[in-house]
Amino acid sequence: MKLKTKDSNTETDILNAAEVIFQRKGLDGARMQEIADEAGINKALLHYYFRSKQLLFETVFHKAFSLIAPQIKSILDDNSSIEDKIKNFTHNYISFISEHPYLPNFIFQELNRNTDFISKVQKTIGFPTIDKFKKQLEREVKKGIIIPIKAEQLFINILALNIFPFLAKPLIKSITNTDENTFNHLMEERKTEVSNFIINAIKRK
Image (tube, rainbow, N blue to C red; front, top):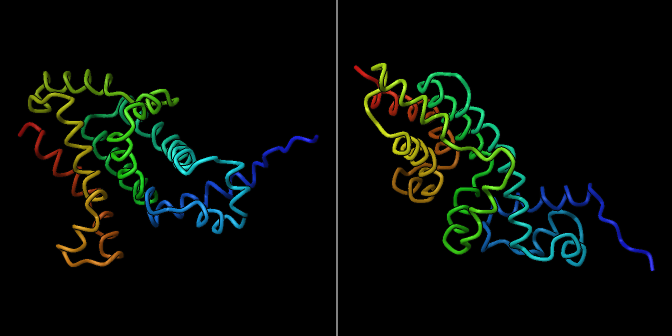
């Protein structure tokens, strides 16, 4: 009996289709049949490549995360100033999440219902840490460039200000009475607004 072999082009088509559907409907709202239709294949073939929607979503996530993680790690570990790190992180993160808007919600969903999720993510090659960022911040605090602040607190502030608009997108659009194009424009502005806000808050006057 001849064994089937998986075709890399078909798998790529499936992952691209899944990303489109997940962006549109999220993990819970997406259906495997919709993904199969988007990829131009039948559902049986989709299940041959990915036996479950959860596995497919995790594959899509890891594919996307593998693109942004090295960028974040590079920014945190390079020799630029804390100020430049904040600017670069904010610009890169907002640009990336604008292209993959489903990721923040997926991460929080997985953290709440799958305790092993973060352990899997941490094993990803190039997973970022704040070790070097922390030491650099301590040096800049000692030099009087930055006001005293813990690296953990600063990093949480950076993440929160960048992530929240995407998590609360429907609420923000409703309260501010903005359409999709206006929201996207606001996110583009935040690349500067967020970094300036944080820098002005921590920079020694």
